[in-house]
Length: 405
Image (cartoon, rainbow, N blue to C red; front, side, top):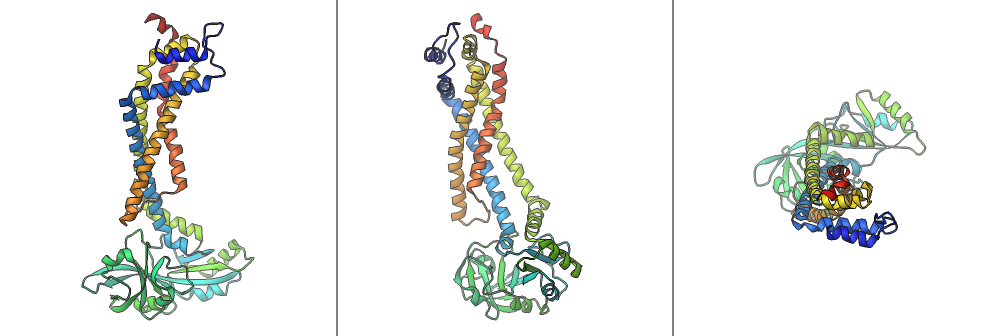
């Protein structure tokens, strides 16, 4: 009989039937046996933890990239609240714009239940760098400056300064691509000169095409569009207005548009870039791969550990321990492995997220408390599932086998 089994018998005592008393002190003994089995073979434990840590880091990075990418996709929409959006027919994404027919604003303002209307002009433009060369930029014209929620995180200049003739706001992360260095630099958009009058920090697009914010008047002038042209219209309802009723009225008045809620437009953007392009599917596939790797490694280790201690488990069964009691030992081993592996894996994951943030990498990785909590549950579940093979092995133990040794 091993020292672990002897300890179990000694701690529990023997009942009148010769079986260990697995009553009042069952829980402490279960943990003790699980701990000793887990740390008995440090090599196996190391392999298990490496597998769990690898799985946690891989899944955390993949899910973090998914969350970060989704944030990029919906960043502008989330910062521009509206009850309803009026967009060109069959528009799938904010980052794939084309113009409305024109004069929609007047029709919307005259619709009962409408409170406030804001136009947005969005168009791809040719940005000529001061030092030579050119690139494509996404020009966003706003009609509610300087009180607009866009752009945000301005570190130099102001929203008021964007109203200046040919004034634009760009993000510092795109300085190199746009060929500029600081506030006040000049460039050309579609052959016309513009001046950087505001600089933001952290506003990126999923498509990597730089956002350039300006007033809607400037945007129309830079693209030679009509004074009534827009790409998207944000609608705020009047107090007490019914959203569905107003939506039906607008859809009737504007048959060549889609009138959708803010959440619907948000989901269209996510669906377009995360699933139709395959970006989200690739990240989800990477997450699944991490989970599979973790399950396989932990399952193999727990199975091997159970096989190595099969005689001890058989002895406990012969002394009267139930299969459920031994299964608890295996499950606690799995949970302990999950907790240790998760702690190390999350520490590495947070460090990776921090490194990407410090270096301002173009790969967006986000880590939220909800994501971290979900990952913990996922890790524990992964290890518990991995323990199933070992549990099946224990269930088939013949207690009489101990007497044939």
